[in-house]
Length: 503
Image 1 (cartoon, rainbow, N blue to C red):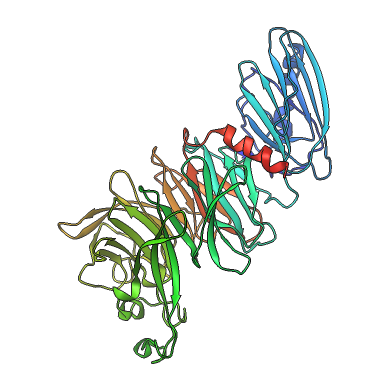
Image 2: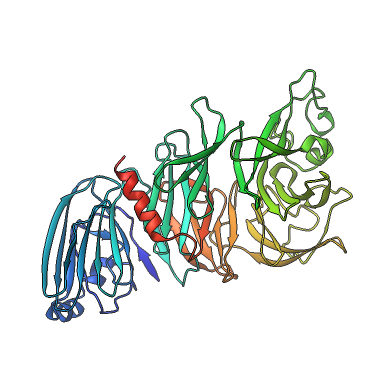
């Protein structure tokens, strides 16, 4: 197992990088591991080493290329290099500047610099690519990462800020848990972050008046465009034709527009909240819309078990997923169900979970004791469709059971949904809200168990491969998104941070 201590650990030691010795992280006590006397004596005799002070996280390893340091108490950073002949070295400067220094014979190099949060330094060594060391902000979440297998994602994107508006960060970390890119949202929390293509990133925020919107930026922080229209922050999904699917909650004005919820414990004159799916272009023009009140009867909410405890919020739509050019899925938490609709007709093609309606599918293969006869889903999130045509759901299990990821094969001819995969995590026994589950090409899952203070990559049996703890009490991320290799180059993240650090 590899354990990387909190990113602002104060070990008070300059750490030695021994290149070519094949050091790997194999224990939780990094200073003891790196300063093993036998290995250190052997490497020092070879005359090959690099020192950095303050200490880096993780501990230096030739195979690891991104690091962070705590510059809050020690803004003066020192890089010392001792390399033998025939080893090329280049100090690439701080926050994107270049010194132009390159040496190809015996090197004794030392550079001291003062760095502010967000700023960093880079250097390159022949045969090992470039290395980046960056200062963390003082209020950045003190992440702890445990690696107990081989992660399948290159990057992990999350927003560990629900319940902690004092540090509303959007962050991208590598497979060692090292923050490589981050942005501090100035207004609100900044949640539901996601890539838009490979050059932009978006997340839900609020305008100055408190209205919901999604801001799309490049990695240097430049705003590309803003999607507005009092949008709900539960989800935004790009479509293949360059538009975006978004959610809006719509309050009925009662009177005169009232709902009779008396048979389910509510009022005969209830002011309820419906949901609306919008398709927007980049200028926030609505090109298509679909309203739940036109297609979902009040009895589907009344019979789902949430009303009247949730008050007026009878739908609580929390996820969208495009399905080809003319279809989409959505998840409705307070209906305990997911739906597939055809955009051109507005028709509901099928429903999975919740109360029965003519389009409901029959579930096959769910062996959980409390599934059949109680409810398939309870407060579920994050419906997704995968390349093989299967559909997954993060079932919170709220009030009934431990959360689970369920992956279904949908058979529209026989009107069935067969459970192909059911993944649970022994560490998580309850999930009150939120959450996500994303399948990687190699079969692992990146899961943000709803309301749990960590994101984790699991194998198909539910065994942790990597876990990123936020260490902010009960604070959690709404979703966690894996980014697989070949999609987002490290240079885009590093260069973006260099630009952000100069603003």
